[in-house]
Image 1: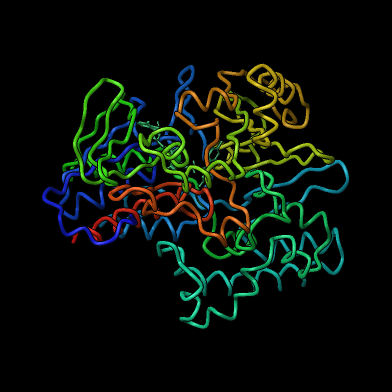
Image 2: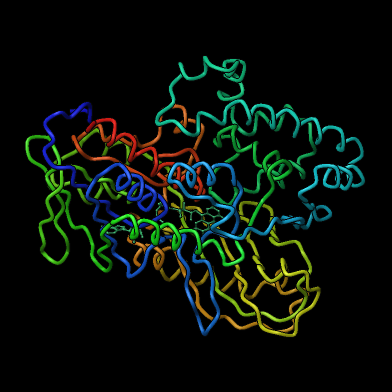
Length: 477
Ligand SMILES: Cc1cc2nc3c(=O)[nH]c(=O)nc-3n(C[C@H](O)[C@H](O)[C@H](O)COP(=O)(O)OP(=O)(O)OC[C@H]3O[C@@H](n4cnc5c(N)ncnc54)[C@H](O)[C@@H]3O)c2cc1C
């Protein structure tokens, strides 16, 4: 029942469920391939987790706060005939982040590898050279493996080209093993693996490609769009509408309809039956756990087994006071406590101090299982606890809490199955293959978005949408 060549197709009508980053790029790509494309989106606007929100006149990104993979997003844009740099004004971030901890001096990561390494060397003699060697090594591996990001389900054979097989042992290792080889001090390793803390991965489970982040920061750099990450999906939705994609907002897909093992359409929560011979779902595991009317035992079972990532708690703030970089301030409290993160877009404006109110966010990543056990009440308490902590209030003369989100609230506002934004990308999950773009259960069903790509970044979701659409175009050509 795999979605192989489908020569019987009469119509080329596609429905995309969800206008997140993956759904939007899939919609545009398919429409450019001559498909009649309808997007069904439960919310009143495009963007999903990457959309914006306004509280008390202050604009925020709902979820994402940084572009760590500009080349990936550029690849997706150029596949769609768009130019990222002409469409979005991107701020290059110099002082990207700091990690505070009670046990050692704050660790700072800058765009410059030399500056970062020199500061590390002053605190931990000998680590300057080790850091530069580590960055050099991972930069070379990243460059060699990058083409695989742009393929659907790259298997072991894809390592054969371009000398990539040299990196097989790197790929088979965990992030922890790669850091062990670097011989960097544990405190530095903790700061470099901060993205695993955010994503809810244990370094011994996390895949080795997460070690590419410092290399990306020091080579292509990290960026924040002048109008926020939220500007990106808005732009994609506009391009898709101009290309003829028909958007149905505030409409929820209730079921994916099928007959004889192939997709026939989608039933909406308004009782409409929309016919289609292709459905691309941008809803991740919800596709198999909630939307399929027929049993999809294989995919359902594999979704049941996956470790899931919680969106955590988030407070949307208005603050006054010190606006000195870094852009991101992390705290690693130690023990089994997860990190916390203060995000201040106004720190990118080169103003040292501001007596004007500006938007900021306090994020608390959470372990998915723990968050589910705590329930909505426990999650709210956790959010309150983070808001009373003093570390993030340093240099802030006044603050107002404009809104808050707990995992349960993210779940209901963004239709997240089990209040999870996506599966956690463990080394095992990456090796075994993520959720496939082509559903193994139902012909004509495809998946796009964060569940199908290694990592959860907006760039990966955008790439995933292009690849899912290309699978459709290939199967129906
Ligand atoms: C707190 C937080 C911080 C993050 N930080 C970063 C970051 O700094 N950098 C980065 O690159 N990424 C970051 N991310 C991750 C990134 O935002 C997501 O991985 C990405 O936006 C997900 O895109 P998607 O296409 O997979 O799906 P989603 O954004 O989940 O979109 C799915 C869409 O489908 C809709 N939908 C769901 N079910 C239905 C249904 N039945 N019918 C109709 N519509 C439906 C939803 O309303 C939603 O609009 C962060 C995420 C969060 C939550």
